[in-house]
Image 1 (tube, rainbow, N blue to C red):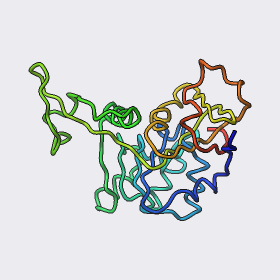
Image 2 (image 1 turned 120 degrees about the vertical axis):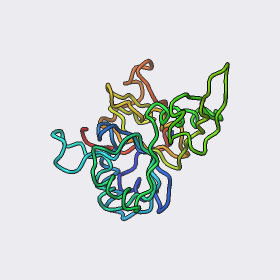
Image 3 (image 1 turned 60 degrees about the vertical axis):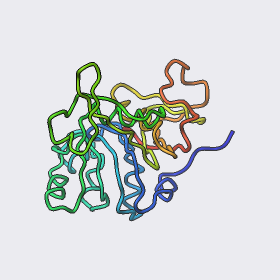
Image 4 (image 1 turned 45 degrees about the vertical axis):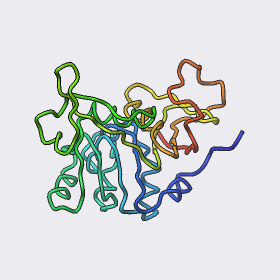
Length: 226
C-alpha cells in the first residue's frame, strides 16, 4: 500500500500560482486549517477557489474558526466561487474594488454543480435563479412547461478537505456537520488532500461510517482539532 502521509508544507508545495482549488468548510468549520496556513507561508497566489464562504476575520469567531479569511486578507485569491461572503467584510470590499472576481452561486446549486463534476454528469436543471441576474448568459430549458436553468459542472485541480477520522489508507469519516462540502469536493478534483483530526489504522473506521472512500484520497495531512 502506498504511503499517503505528507506534511502540510508538502501539501502546499503541490499548489501552484493560478491553480483551481476546492476548499471544504462552512464558516471555517471543517476547514483544512493547517494546509491553509502552509499555503500562506508558501506565498502561493492568484488562486481560483471554490468554497462555501471565505470564513470570518481573525477574532470574529469565538471558536477561532477562520477558514479562508487570511487568504483573502493577503490577496492570495484571484477568483472566488462561493455561496455567501457577508461574514467577511474584506471579501466584499475587494469585490467592490474589482481586485477580486466573485461568482456568487445559490448554495444548493453550488453543491449540485460540484456533485455533477464528481459523478460525470453534464449539468443539473434547477429553477433557482430564473428571472434573476443568476440566469444571465445561461441556457434555459423548458421541461413539462416549466423553465429551468442549466447549471454546468464545477471541477477543480486540487481539493483540500478535512476529515474527523481518517485511516492510513485514506478512508474518511466526518463528524456531524463537518461533512458539509468536503465529501462532494473529494469527488470533483484531480488531486485530493485530506487534513485529518485523528489518524487510525485500516479497519478502525466501521465500513458503514466511511463517507469518502480511500480511492478518492491521494494524500493525508495530520492536522489539529477543528
